[in-house]
Length: 138
Image (tube, rainbow, N blue to C red; front, top):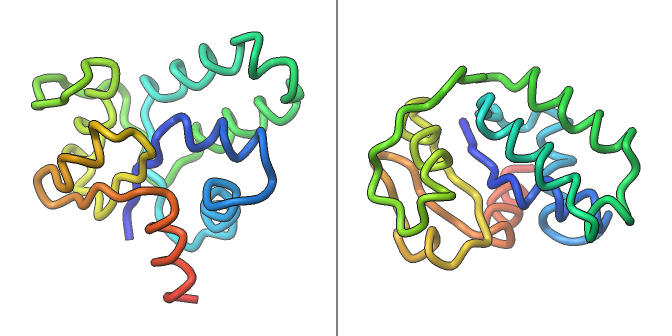
């Protein structure tokens, strides 16, 4: 199954080793699903990881490990085209990634994205729901 993870999910997993984001990232590292990423997402992650409120709690090594993981995603898109009906232009790249890769899921905690429920063939679900889906498939 192909999955796009919202960039904030990676940050949440770094900030807390407990909860759905951490379980999802752990499942990705265990190769329980194919991760879809892009150069846009890597840049967004690096930018967000430099915020003071994140940098204070997350080591540079942990950030580097995540960046390297994103670079070795199962599906790594160079640049994604824009033009989706995103409620937030900042999240448009996530929807474009999902469409371009034919992802099964886009996992996000963003309420505006969750209200869409679907984009093309991709289901948009919360981290809690996706973690539950993974647990059922274990």
